[in-house]
Length: 225
Image (cartoon, rainbow, N blue to C red; front, side, top):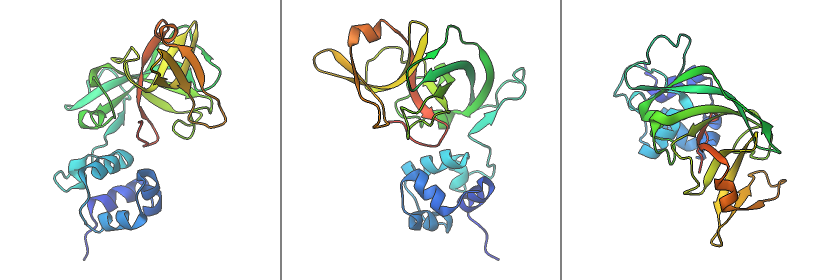
């Protein structure tokens, strides 16, 4: 009797088809079909696949029998996170991908435990110990960020020292925009949705705002570049 590969088992548990996985990873269905049959994959694709399926790379490669999820919702905060996991707070804040979302105060409404290895796959993450989760609203960052998504912020990145998607407060409103630095010292606030035009601001003006952090992960399996 043929034994299913760990990848095939994880896909079945997640209820995902080969076409859906291929679309999430940006690869061909034939590639996914090869992996489910036990064929080799690159380390980069394995990491992406593990993130989509919510398991560890070690499980997908057969090095671990336990398919423990890379992300676990915390039901009892009084119980410490498992070894090898980092507990990330979920804030009440909503960052707007549109005109601005009124937020004068944020408080913790829950927690999620992330596997440390998974946190380290977040592009550009600088500290897995200073991660926080906020909600998004508005459609200006679609398709990268859906109108209502959970976003992981690296709070260690509280200055605009590189391009990327940032969450920042201007007065009492929270915004989520892609930031592009210009040679003349100005900054473009970009929307991934082409229906929204870029906004040019003085870099000092933006840096005088409160930078909550850089977005390093969106709960849709997509990589943030």
